Length: 90
Image (cartoon, rainbow, N blue to C red):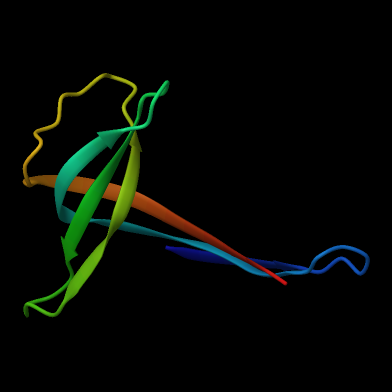
């Protein structure tokens, strides 16, 4: 799924584009880091998008751990659903 919006206000900075995308797949998550005083965990993530070694998506994902799930420190496979959002302001 992909969604976009565009808004312009004359006297304020202009929001040129905003959007979001969602992705579901099998990911390798590693190196979990807790954000202090919260239940948020940041992971290094790698998702396979196709049949070759170059078909990868690599990034950092944040997860709100409402159930206090315990994650391994080393790389592990997980099925994930992630939403990515962006804003461009000029």
